[in-house]
Length: 338
Ligand code: NCC
Image 1 (cartoon, protein in one colour):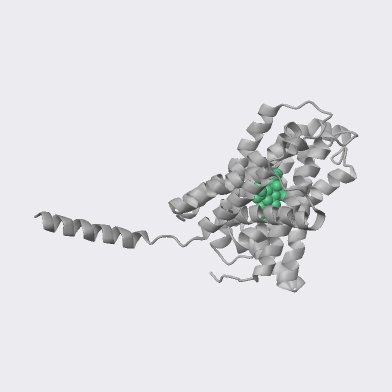
Image 2: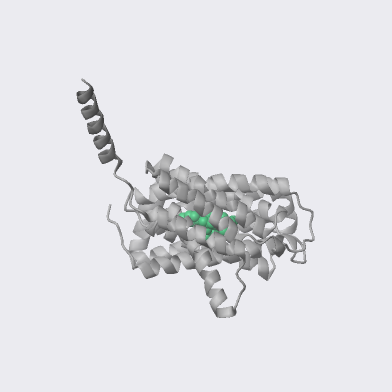
């Protein structure tokens, strides 16, 4: 498989946009579910609309990549119309992501955005575990340690209990935490599954996205029918769509596409590390530019994030050599004792 390389600048750009969008998305989503006035929209339709927009944008990107309408048509025929097995393969992450994306709405309807962001960091060790189990990659003990250190660091960096917003709806924190637990498992599994499929062939990222979003539309439509079917028929699919709701759908679409680009050029564990670094750097930049006050919790979290990135990047010890040396030493010892 040919490995396409891009400049470090481009990778940093994608990571920064992904992280900024994710932060804005969480806050805007929470706002539309709890504070925003007016009739509450159906969250299932928002998840479905997002899949449609991502599909259209991916088609546009594939058109740009192929360079001509004929090649675009050939590519769609080859990879989509005549590739039911590939479509089926990609329906696995699309079902799991559909559950995850719906869970984000359940969680943010019941928990404060800051609490959500902090608890959601459990996805970092969960993603590492999925990477080890599904991609047969190994992590040294030090790397595992750094993964948990990163998780603690990001939790501290994002810790801001004073930021709680006044809400106009009833909340159930237990339901919120359960939704996060499901979202964490889904994020780890679906992310690594998509990475495995993407990196095991030369098929374009945009083709893989189209394959996934096509089944994503079907799955999320089933979600609309099962959860809000009657109410949607009565009030309409786009009932309650204020400009804020449209903004949330826009952020979800852009964020999803940037996530796929980041996974293509790095990997899911690196996505977690880089997102953490971007959060720390953007806060430090705000301190320098706008004179924002840094709290002790933030500073300790930022230090943990930096140390964890350093530790994760350290070269792994060659255990095979160590084992051989150990065995040599053991045999010498045995010889001496004989
Ligand atoms: O949780 P997370 O990502 O792993 O979720 C991945 C999101 O990207 C979409 N996706 C993934 C692969 C692909 N080829 N196309 C896609 O559209 C999935 O549908 C899913 O929505 C993160 O690492 O923290 C991140 O978090 C999400 C989001 O903040 C959380 O899921 C909370 O709800 C970010 N998504 C957005 O900002 C819209 C993502 O960028 C980063």
